[in-house]
Amino acid sequence: MSSSDDPLRIEYADGPNGLRLARQHPPPGAASFSATYVGPAGWAYDPHGREGIARVTAQLLTSGAGKRDRIELARFLDRAGGTLTAQCDPESAEVSVWGPLDSARALLGVLADAVMRPRFEAADLERVRRQVVERQLREMAQPGARASRELHLAIFPPDHPYRTSGMGDRRSVGRLRPEDLAKFHARHFTGSGGLLVATTPMRTRPLVRLLYRLFDDIPSASPPPLAVPRIVGRAPKEVRVDLPGRSQVDVRMGGPSISRSDPNYPAAYLADEVLGGATLLSRLFTRVRSKGGLAYHASSQLDAMRLGGYWTAEAGTGADRWRRVVPMLRQEVDRIAREPIPAAELNLVRESRLGEVALALESTSDAHELALDVAYYGLPEDHWVSWPSVLRGLSPAEVRSAAEVAFDRSHSTTVVVGPLGKS
Image (cartoon, rainbow, N blue to C red; front, top):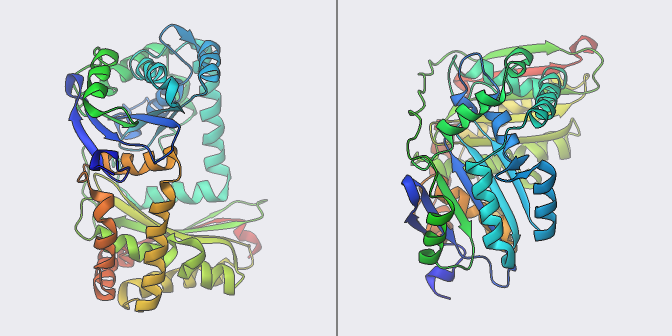
């Protein structure tokens, strides 16, 4: 297999108006392709008083574009065997298309329409507005969503990109008009600062020529870079929110952490997998859920992004058990940062995670996620080829040292949400 046919490698190229291209060959025998546009259109760019506009804009990109309204677009995708999706996070928004190889050119045209020519029809806006308001209500009323919300509010200062979920409130979303969305879209779905990741057998040069035809009108200017307020260290604290009538208590513990570009990231990634990321093998699942029987779920996550990151350890438990669960979470976070992981435990988790990379090559969509990860963070073209040797070269001492930086509980917050009056 040549390097250009290896799905673990990507090839970078320049596209129209500053758009960056990353091309990945699909897994052997794959009969489908995927393509994703990623642009500087996350909810951290929401204008004051228009909070929620990034999420609403992204959601509407799949509700009609170019000459097709929502129903016509849905019927076209059905005939082509394709899917069109969009999502939003603090730093960026994504629009993705997937489908059979023989529909690739037509579906790439659909992606170009969705990225550059959304319709923003009033009826679609009203439908999406209702959906977002429903999510706002769930964020306040459901223990898990409320715990995540309160944790981020406690960790990050005002105007920090990671402080909110981007949902806005009923008032800010209610005042959005199609012209507001069009203005936001024009400023943030751009070539400069944008990225197009394609998983396709088409070679890079003809793919670039095709993109110059399909995306020739994409704006070249990009919005100003995001400002990241300084996070001042503070003593650990606890936040409790009583939600009477709920059956479950959700616990979230977390704090600021490292970015993806931090040299500590590979070792910190392994530490997180041991702590709670590799669910069935992890310490949190084993101690709190499997052996203790004290939680419905228990896990951890290291969210290392471009501008920074945060860590979370969490569990869902009963109103009569959360007081026993909270100390367990704290103890396991402390242990991962203070004690070297036994070699046998570290090797088991490490090889399990490397096996997940191999499993991702069984489908185009999963392989595409690997390419997206590399391209978005500007990693080397052979990142996934060298990843096994990087992880296998890490010692227990190096993993512990990275965990001490990435999982710093001395500045953490613990949030407990649920029917606390019963406890």
